[in-house]
Image (tube, rainbow, N blue to C red; front, side):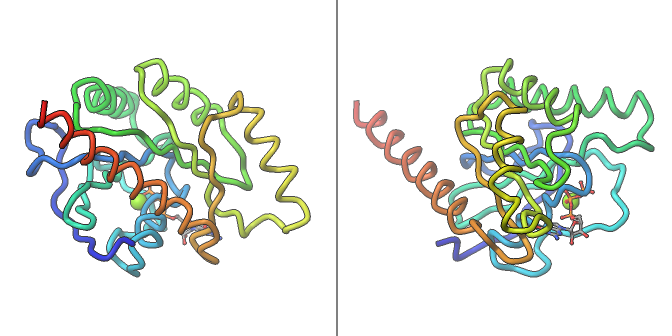
Length: 202
Ligand SMILES: Nc1nc2c(ncn2[C@@H]2O[C@H](COP(=O)(O)OP(=O)(O)OP(=O)(O)O)[C@@H](O)[C@H]2O)c(=O)[nH]1
Ligand SMILES: [Mg+2]
């Protein structure tokens, strides 16, 4: 279970990062539900700010969970009113984060279940994989599609992404499958600490 969660700090450069713990990065376009997802996962109403007006600030927000791993909330991409230079800055920031970061376990790409993967989503998905990072796709807002149509929609999304290895559709409203994501995260974190122990014994 995720028993403890607290906001630690926001930063633009990894060199300013707080105490070292394994990290899981959340990426997704503005309004996809990243902050809501953090709140669902940690069972807190206002840990991460849920915005109706997406912000322009390029900050990586570090949340420490169970005192042993970070969830890192990145700013949403595809924010139309962002200037070209700010968009480039965003890509550079994320690329740096993905390339020079031993503590990053994997990336969660959040996409909208109802909207399906946008061009930006597909580009981001390929971009992360090209940098050699594992991607877990989390489709949010599942509650917006009627139950009878969910299977078909899920199949469509998966095929558009070329059948991702790990795909979980969730709802931050009904909390459907939030426990599944929680189990996945905790299992990965446990493995990380286990491997670290084994390695340190050698
Ligand atoms: N129906 C439904 N609405 C959701 C869900 N998740 C988030 N929302 C709504 O979607 C809007 C955006 O949610 P946020 O969590 O702020 O999205 P974000 O990805 O953090 O947005 P930025 O911080 O701007 O990048 C809010 O109005 C949420 O209430 C969901 O699973 N179902
Ligand atoms: Mg947010």
